[in-house]
Amino acid sequence: MQGRRLATTDELIAIVSPDSDETLARLAEWTDERGMDLSTVDVGDDIGDVYDENRATLGVTLGGDGTFLEGIKTFSPRNIPQLGVNTGTLAFLARVEPEDLADALDETLRGRAAVDSRQQIHVDAPGVDATGINDVMIQQVPPENPIDRKVTRLDVYADEEYVGEFEGTGLAVSTPTGSTGISLSASGPVHYPVNNHTLQIVPLHTHKLGVRPIVVSPETELRIVTQGQASLLVDGGRAHTILTADDEIAVTGADQLAHVVRTSYDDHFFTAITKKLGWDVRDAEVPDEKRLENRSPTRSGTTGESTGFVERALTVATEAAQAAGEPLRELHGQVESVHHKTDKSDIVTEADHQADRIITTVVRNEFPNHNLFSEESTRQRGTDSDYTWVIDPLDGTGNFAHGNPNYSISIALIETGEPVLGVVYVPETDELFTGIADGGAWRDGDPIETTDRDALDESMLISGYDPDGTFLSHFYQESRGVRRLGSAALNLCYLASGSADAVWEHDTYPWDIAAGLVIAREAGARITDEAGEAFCFSLETDGRTALLGSNGPLHPALLEHMEDGVPALTQSEGEA
Ligand code: IPD
Ligand code: CA
Ligand code: CA
Image 1 (cartoon, protein in one colour):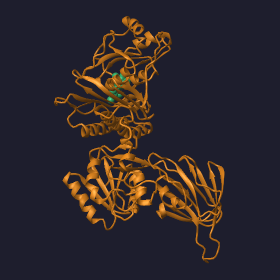
Image 2 (image 1 turned 180 degrees about the vertical axis):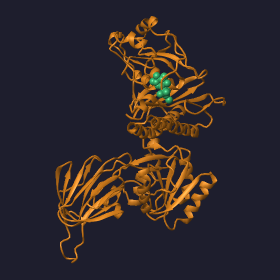
Image 3 (image 1 turned 90 degrees about the vertical axis):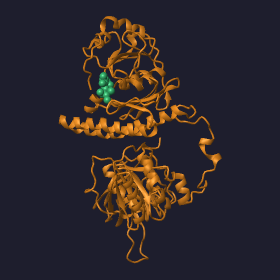
Image 4 (image 1 turned 120 degrees about the vertical axis):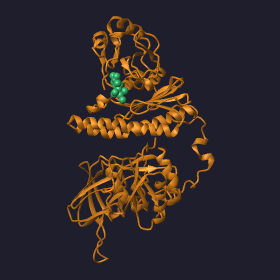
């Protein structure tokens, strides 16, 4: 997976370099035709006056890589995804050409573009506190007399351990994005930047044969101490200062990632370095026989099956769930630090709606004829299609509202009434559960199956909503434990993957369990109602039903104990 989907865009803000008038006119025409708002600012100007944080904004830069870097400074602190259009000459970061602008934006609007997160670098030194996306250079200051000494010495520490003395012109610490810049020209390695969160130290014009580039994690605290005067430049001088002897420079990975939009109109990484940097071991166009998709007819990633409708649907559901996970993770972090109930519920409502909007946009764009049935928005049925997507954009709202990580996103595809595909994504752990009817069930791509325990006193049970505690009181003493975790979709995935032997839900809505049903059944679970009759999935009533799921062998013992114990179903208010 190369990055999340970008699903919603309400408005565009463009940072425009001089000499980009023609491209700006194309952009204005494109937004006009679609009735979208476009605000423009010159390079270096703030977007504070035109940016509305409640709208889904796409940042666009029109210019070369310099403008792109300005865009990063402006957009990344606001978490705005950024698309770079190249009106410059040799752009490496701004990769969409002006003639592809409209198509690239259409793709983005349709939820087909991806957003890659890029590692940034943070520098704290006397007079500089800055974040960059490329690199930090610490170098000698040219001597007044050109024949005077031209080297500098820098002492480098990593997490308090002394790395050594770097002697030469200086050193660069670069991100994967910056690895193809100054660090490349100093013989540093090229980093494949997708999901690559590392930093590297590269000596510049070193006089020592033994010193090599070093790769560190973004958490590593690098400390660089000057032995004499030195200049410090962040991203080629976007922040800079002159340091004196014994100054300390703290360098580490920035918490703030940059979000870069990638469309099919961008060159992929190795194509870009082939065209622009002379990468010599392939041609710019990959010959047909070298294309991976032509080598193995059964490649499809998650299931190993040939690519067909269900696999495409699985990919779309997975991407939609992972895209929706991003705002949920962000908002979940805010919930934990909010103390007033009203604010909290605002965030939770916002979370439900943002996730819902992303999922429904992605699914609707990919399958415009299918029905959508979401807890939070649409119950659009009645089209001719046999297919209905059933969505719970946030299952486990109660947990979410209390800062508990046990919540999930549930997306299922129903074919003529039967759930045939399920995706449950857990944003906080980045776990992905998937299932295809008659195809299998997987966690993060690995097959899963239920346990085979048949003794109640060895079993671990999960209870969903249990209004008067009957399930708990009947099974707590009889089993190894009854857990109450708070997300019905996830409960079924735990049954499927063997972390529980059975689950009980006193009443559920179809969106709580549609995806989990496919996953659990495919992993070998038996799912019935409270009386042991096969569980009947239905969208017809929107009503709540009871569900007893187990690994199979445990089912008789569970039913036996339930006979007197569990209260008759009522249309009780469920919990959030
Ligand atoms: C709830 C959760 C919970 C279950 C409730 C559901 P929500 O869904 O799945 O575990 O016991 O019955 O309503 O409201 O968080 O989407
Ligand atoms: Ca739910
Ligand atoms: Ca929900």
